[in-house]
Image (cartoon, rainbow, N blue to C red; front, top):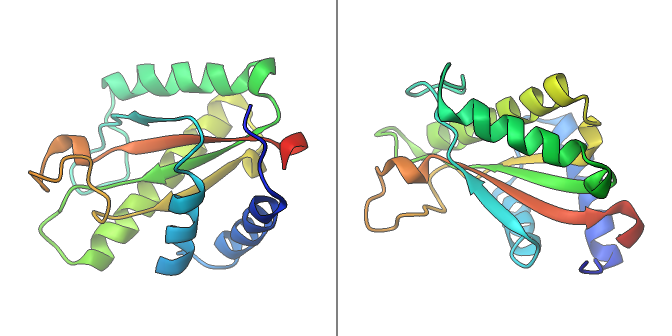
Length: 160
C-alpha cells in the first residue's frame, strides 16, 4: 500500500475536528482534501438520491452498491483504513451554496448508512462535499453521473 506522510495524519485530525465543530469545510479545506485524495485508490458510486434531497432513493441500485461497500469496509483487510466519502451534485438550478450543502448532506447520509448498518467506527469515515464544483461529466453539468459519491481509501492508521 501507499505510505502516507505525517502531513496527512495532521490534516485528518484537523479536518475531523473542524467538521465536528461546524457544518461545512472552507473551500481551501475542501481543496486540500481533494489534493490529498488524488493518488489513493478511489471509486465513484452512483447513489441515487431523491430529487433535491439527501435521502437515498428506496429500492434503488444504490442500496446494493452501499451494501457491497459496507461489507468491503467491514472486512479485516480494510479494518484500519480511513476513507473519505466525497459528495458531488449536478447543477441543481439553484445557487452554489445550495449545491454545496446538498452534497455535504449526501456524503453524510452515506456515512450514516455505513455506520448504522455495518457498525463502522465514525472516525474511519471523513465526509466532504464538493457541490457541483467537480463534475464527472464536464460536457453536461446537469448529467445524472455528476450526482455521485466518491469513496477514497486513504490507507491505514499504521501508515499515517
